[in-house]
Amino acid sequence: MPDAARASSTSRLSPLLLSRSISTWASLTTVSRAKGL
Image 1 (cartoon, rainbow, N blue to C red):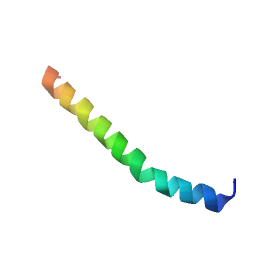
Image 2: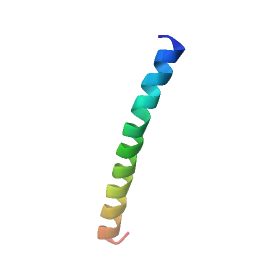
Image 3: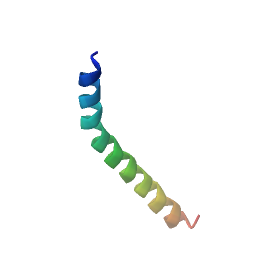
Image 4: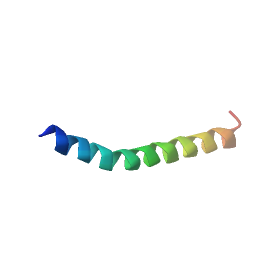
């Protein structure tokens, strides 16, 4: 795969992965607080 194509696909996916990891971290934090950890 050419570097340009790889870079453009990475920049397209990064916001999606970032928001997904943030929502996962937020839900884990909420569960931890609910358990009183």
